[in-house]
Image (cartoon, rainbow, N blue to C red; front, side, top):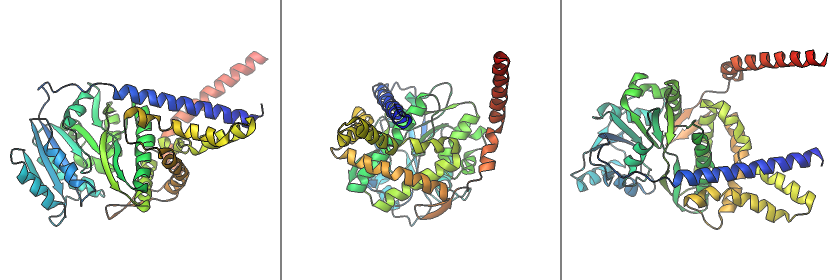
Length: 399
């Protein structure tokens, strides 16, 4: 068998094996039962930074007041009193007078990250030792806090949840669902299953003492993204980031092409800036290369090309189907468009450093290959020394 065909065969087989493993991981994680509330969970402060009116804002913010957790204070944080979300929050506080909820207004400039600046006042005002930071567009189930605590272990420093797209409206919202559900969440759970979970800013459960020991809430400003800084802080303390077993929904509503592209590009540039060694293999994680290999094999062996390629594409939807997430009959088409976008996003992430977040111009550190490779230098030298030693041993045996 010619080497190119053999390589295509091996790559397709490996890809299918990884897909099958990811489906198994998702099914195993999602079949775990969330423990019922036993009344022994500690008081929690729930901090929700707000900025503008998101799609389904009334539903997502109302879900904060309907949590089945008796000892929880809610702190809504807004940078400016003129923000259009303020009247909505005030109305909800009036509708639920029995809920311990407050609206905090102000902008503490502790970093270049507007979201972190908005969160700081909530963190400082929190009354309890356990603090949840949750984005405004997370739709919270009634057992939201119980789900977070269910994944806390002795060696845990943070519990997070990736967003799962729900209630999309329109073509580009379906594309975003394809990014969130059958690509990003899938890989996050694979990595988390090997004990290398990454924090996700959508939801983060902290033990206050852990972050205060690292220098306080302000240290999250050391990275352009607070969740990247959180991951490094937790790992630096010898603890682990864990993901909830059942990811939390983010209602999408209508999305435009530019919104989807800009959001994915922002996340890609943040990943590149904070975790380059994990970002670089992403070029192999999409479906474009496997489908090219599938087309080659179909052509060589005379198989029906379109059917074979669609079979590979359909397998990528297994996680969403097994997990009960949003999937339509046209999802293979949305997945194909996503896979065609991934290489372009990868190149764009490498070439640029700026992005826009809710109207704020931000920038990540530009690539400096020598500086970025410096932490790998000891490992490279160690590997080179071992390789030289083995080469000398082989030469000695040969002589």
